[in-house]
Length: 112
Image 1: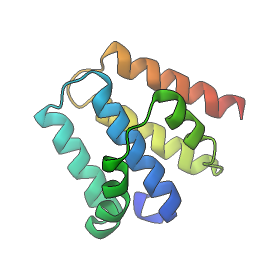
Image 2: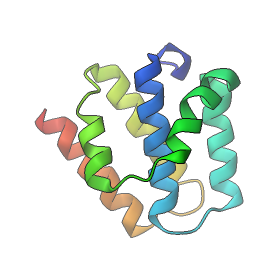
Image 3: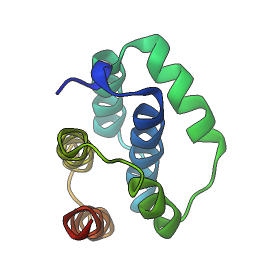
Image 4: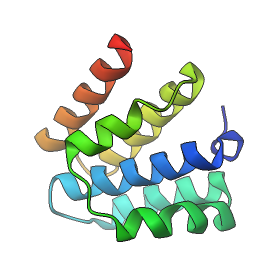
C-alpha cells in the first residue's frame, strides 16, 4: 500500500507518529530528515504539508499516540505505518526509545 492511498486521517496519524518517533531519542539526524523526505515524496508534498503541519504543532505523549493508533482500522495501513516508522527509526540507528515505541505500537495493533 502506498502512502498516497491513505485517508487524510490516516496520513495525519502517520505524521504524528513520524514526529513522535523522531523525537523519541532527542536527536534529529540528517538521515532521519532524509527518511521524512522519502515519506513526504511518497505521500505527495501537498498531502504531507496538510497532514504534518497540525502534527508538528501538537505535543503528544506515547500514550496519546497509541490511542490515536487505535483509530487506524485497516490492517494494510497498520502494516505500512509500522514499516515507515521502522524505516525512519533505522535511518540512523534504532535507539532503545524508538524500538520501545515500535514494540508498543505492534502490540497495540496485534491486540486490537
